[in-house]
Length: 90
Image (cartoon, rainbow, N blue to C red; front, top):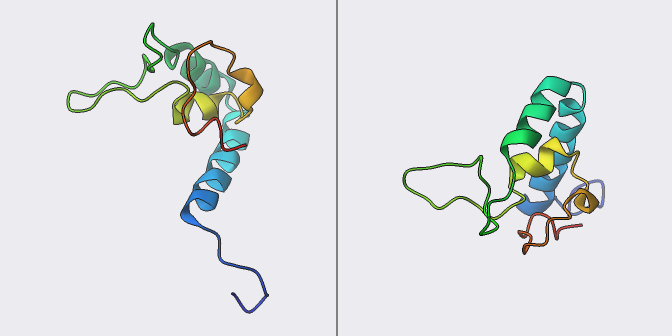
């Protein structure tokens, strides 16, 4: 425990906190937010169309950028495919 009596934050807690902070910033950039929302959408297999890589499979939707562009609100992800672990954190 830290000197303040609190446990140090875990990596997952830190990442979740940082995504929330970034989501707050993105809300002030409507053009960036709207572009991320338009590009990071699910394909027929439930993977993100906007996350492309020549060496890896696209992540399951919602990806971190889709989550970020929607303000981190899990209720915004209503697509009927299986959601990723990111959306189940809340």
